[in-house]
Amino acid sequence: MNFAATALGAGIAAALVIAHMQGALTPASDAFTGATVIDARLDPMTTASIAPAASDTSRPAAIRLIDLRSGVTCKMATPESAARHFAPAPIGPDCAGSPDLQNVALWRSSSDGSLELADSDGQTVLRFMPGDGVLYESIYPSEAMVTIVRSRG
Image 1 (tube, one colour):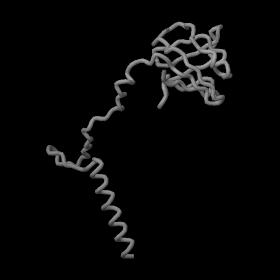
Image 2: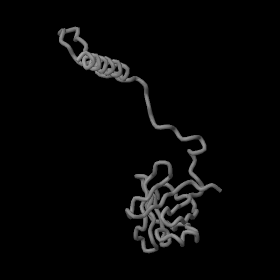
Image 3: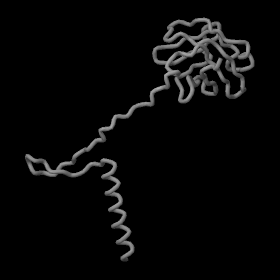
Image 4: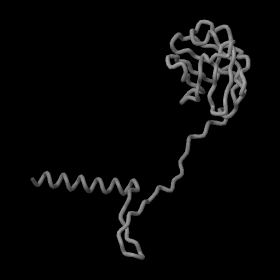
């Protein structure tokens, strides 16, 4: 019984110490009314995303499309930002080995950051959104597994 009481007391003390270190809500008294109120202490440290390195801030001259299912990669010039109308996609012959990339003829990017690749009739073949660790990740069709990264040389 003494062991259980000691363990419970140590657990409560540890929880209070941790809560205090994390800036948890603590009771305080209101100077005007004398009533007990909760004081929400916020951490004053400002946080944000990690800024890209200086070399990453410029738009790459070329991008590389990687079909993760077939292993095909191909290089093409970077699309203009926020082009509303489809433009010819300068896709290379290396993409012909990919079932997802072989029909790409047009592309456009939009103000929401998405990139759309279409066939010669303007029908969407692939749609991308900015990715985590890559420039773009395919989101349409759902079975496509294509990423876009910066091209090196």
